Amino acid sequence: MTHKNKRIFFKHFIAFLGVSLFSQFATPVIAENIKINVGALRFTSHAASFVALERGYFADEGLDVELKFFQAAQPMAVAVASKDVDYAVTAISGGLISLAQKGATKVIGGALSEEKGIDGSQIIVSKEAYSAGMTDPSKLDGATWALTQTGSSFHYTGSQVAKHHGHTFKYKPLQKVGAIIGAMKTSQVDAWAIVPHIAKPLNGGGAVHIIGAISDYIPDYQVTVVFTSADNAANEREKTEAFLRAFSKGADDFNAALVDKTLGEDAAEDMIKLIHKYVYADRPYEKAAPSIRNGAMRINKNAAMNLDNIKAQLAWFKSEGLVDSSITFETLVDDSYVASQ
Image (cartoon, rainbow, N blue to C red):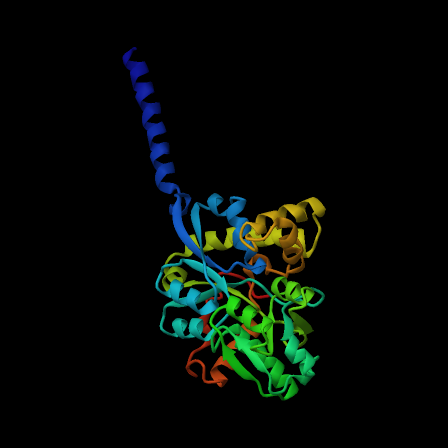
């Protein structure tokens, strides 16, 4: 190799090396395989996370996701605050709000929502309550209304039904959804409101009676929200935006297949099979599929939030003395990540 050719070779080699090094350092951190834990319930309403995981949307964003399952909203909020879980989807609860006030959690997006024309959360009563005349929400005065915990979403929805009719309810915390189902079946409690993939099978099997819908009382209800630690929201923007993008793609697929039903029956069945890995997995597919299909509610596009309803929920928690009266909307919610609905 001549001196001139050597000079040309090294010139191109240095240029190539420079491009390679630049590419390496220019690659965003999120392109690495970042491990995160995502909190969820085994509900159809959490399908966006299931779809994003199964179809590789999280992986496409550089996120190595493990799902962590819970049986109620408030323990999930505690897990996010302690950073055992990085991101989660669940209803606003007194626990979540109180943790936000302590600077531990932040709501960053919307998920499940009530929408006119789509079957949402159903008001159900036990067989004994129905036989005693509680055949309509207007006849529930004095009823025992089931909750997971005081200050849960079940507490909020029950209060809105009671307020509308001028009723007084006796609220009974039972800690877990499974315990509430057992109590409804044995008439230990009178009434409850729950998402359709649980309410409809219970009604169809004769264990309870559906007597109304929560959308009649809270038509714009932001049922669940996406939240994370306050530290993630403030200091891990790239990772948080990556999570929301993947989650939103999962929601789009779910809505198209089972809510808007624009993709045809094959796509709907594929979606139900995917969800069945996580919801009613202990049941044969043939028995689980109708419940999953009938339980499809809207998951907000692009994780948009219904800010007005979130503000209304916060006001209710404060008015009931369930959270500190000084907490502000801005303390609970970081609305810089997504658009309002």
